[in-house]
Length: 355
Ligand code: NAD
Image 1 (cartoon, helix red, strand yellow):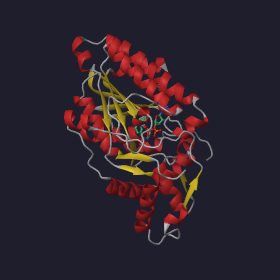
Image 2 (image 1 turned 90 degrees about the vertical axis):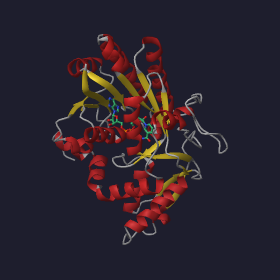
Image 3 (image 1 turned 180 degrees about the vertical axis):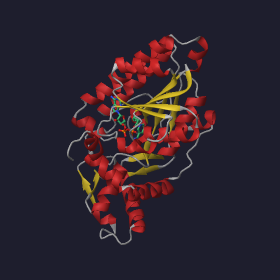
């Protein structure tokens, strides 16, 4: 086994790419970055690693057994961190099949391949190996305003095809620890925000629409509550769980920042007014429009992260106000990236296709 190699799946997406950046800047590990490059993963996102010889990019599917077997054989990684997934709830409502395929079957395939690889390692290497699966708080279902936050012991009650597929994969990962002894860990994190998030998710969508003077669509009454975490904080938690977490355990990760959607959009508008005072769309708040709610829209998520705080010493560093400001500034400074990933120009150019 090669102690300095980590296989990261989905590392051309939002959280995965932030995690790869953190690993490359803080550790000597080499990252094998396996990503299918769906609409949500983009070469423009990993261009930042192009000159780093500790980054190896492979375009491929976690559901491709032959490919995963070959990668594990060739690189003999000490850890696998599985970010690869279909992640957008609205897309899972319109077409759940790809969520079942990647999130459930893909994770199963990765686990099976990993189990065969791990069985061939020495006893010592088997003990050191880690399979870390990145999951979401959405598997716990929806809370009322009065209910206590989700803990690691909250029963799974997924409500959307997305969260149901993530819940299924979590169960498989857990089962591989209990049945085969594979040293797996799971993190269940709340909503992330920050650089490189694909502009279909709430925060980047609102920022980009506001730039363009387009309506800012808010679902229902805007009172759905999420717990927001800056992506760098999530990546620190993942690195810590990888290093110090106990196999078989799950860790909740949250931002201690419960906010309703309407508050969030108003806050983004206020930051945009301040950072872009000459925009013809000021005050941006005038662009807010309430639209028909998402079917089965979970009302509230909240995370109790006492376990990771007490056992591993993690807590979020960024607060919601400074984190949102950094995020808005990043999108202002990186409009070319937004343009590229939304038109998919980069991939088309590489393939010689006219944009
Ligand atoms: P994302 O949609 O930005 O990125 C997903 C990446 O996975 C993309 O690069 C995509 O190309 C890749 N991918 C998709 N299917 C693949 C396949 N079959 N094989 C290989 N690669 C594939 O997602 P994200 O927001 O970065 O989320 C990453 C992980 O974190 C997901 O598992 C998600 O469930 C979890 N998570 C996300 C959040 C959040 O707020 N974004 C919160 C908690 C947990």
